[in-house]
Image (cartoon, rainbow, N blue to C red; front, side, top):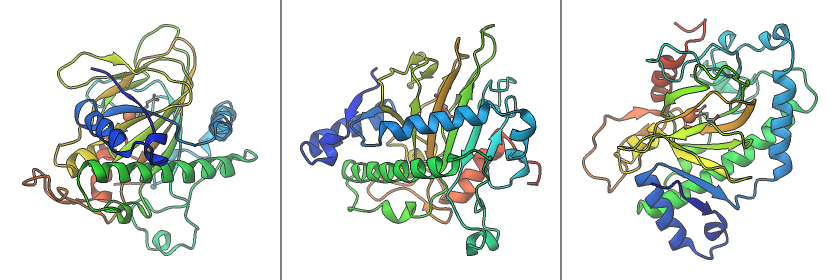
Length: 308
Ligand SMILES: O=C(O)CCC(=O)C(=O)O
Ligand SMILES: [Fe+2]
């Protein structure tokens, strides 16, 4: 089974909307993974996110610890190596470190003041331009992810803009990842897992390691197309689509040379009610809010110190 490469311009320019939606719909039903070229996110911005990530990860432990995700109840900041296991059943911690950025809210935002779940301020390392670069990327990739949902609407015969109200202030996380060279080849970069949200858009640096396990098949290497996003359907969209779309297990093998990636996980608004989309038949799952769903999944992966 292939992981198809789809040119977003067929949709965005209007030149082949029907053909694009047909190919996309097939990918979402069969593999749950596809690559997107022609997405319009500037190469320089992507390079800059990688560079700022490299600068951060190279900082001393003592400095990175100041922004430790375990001291932050809102899923923001630095996750050190050995703090996470995406496959919680494996007994193996992931060989990676990461930095998370959430929806950027001001300290006096009512949602922050009211202590709503996941609604916090971002925390930033003291690196020139780090914040601006991350937020510029966050805005562009969020817009691209929303646009992708317009194609899902066509494929699923939903009214135009059906998804838009669910992604106005989403629980979306930008996560810069760094996998150190694992010269001993042991352990796992990221354990086998499915993603939690609606979609994930991933940029890699070309170092291999990402593998995908379509249903009923063995692990296959994700292809690398320079500049293309690897996109996958998450569990929340699978549930929302009443299992019409599939969320597919994937993992990262320990890389021989250092590997970096930039993931953007789009989860819906916290108060969005996720229930079988119209036209998808009798609901297989109970309705759940975006926040409750994400919390239940994150708790299985790691628990910040100050959450009980
Ligand atoms: O770094 C990668 O290539 C994939 C990471 C991933 O699957 C995740 O963090 O959910
Ligand atoms: Fe993932």
